[in-house]
Image (cartoon, rainbow, N blue to C red; front, side, top):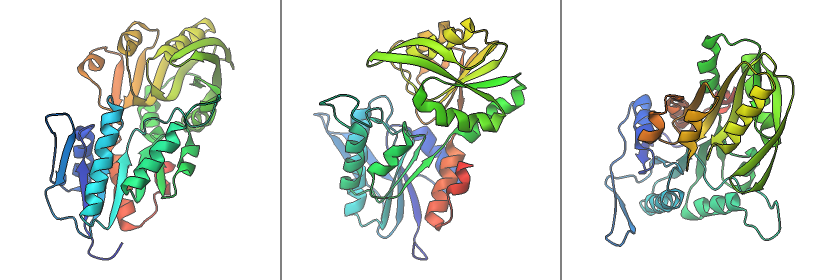
Length: 315
């Protein structure tokens, strides 16, 4: 960046609370913009301050209404591009449509690649996100992608709890790398849930690979959607002799009956981050703890703007 270029952070409608925390960490106010809808539901947006030559960061998460939030983000990026912002970074804490990231059967889309193309087509110069469903999604972009991890925040929560004989559990084979990396932070063992998914949002747990008898276990995943897999995993772990059962995830999608399932489950606690804002129903289950990732995103934004290294935030 050229000397004298300012940094400005703007918020979409999906997660204004996180955007405000990030701006507070950076010691700046959120940028001025107007975001509403026309009477027919179309999105109406305009930037209410000068951004010519500025380093612009737009924070918008793929929360509950993914389709609307994505369209809102595309429109915002286009507006800043036409307002002559020097660089536009899309800060997407939860990258939605990431679960279809390869052709697992004939005649299916690769939606993760589609969204990447749309973000670039809209005019995004850089992407800042967290815990992509698959790290390989970064390869779908031709612009720089910084994929932060919530592991330091989650580990910091569990370390003071003095758990005994900790085992980190991956709910499927695809999450083994994530679970192994997280386990190193807690000096924990590793176990894997062997499951099959006969239909979308339907999973059947078969068995546990690894010894969890007498262990305090933490089921780690990038997201919890309907919580079906999570609850069945907890039941399988209890059958195998696990002592205390916790779960942790970065993105609390928590759709459908998820909140009730978590409330009635064997889980002692589900620890999540605020990449997606929880609704009131989620907050009253009594089993969900929310950790903030605002400092991680704020520090990453600061370093990107200054042109300094972001890699130390991954360790």
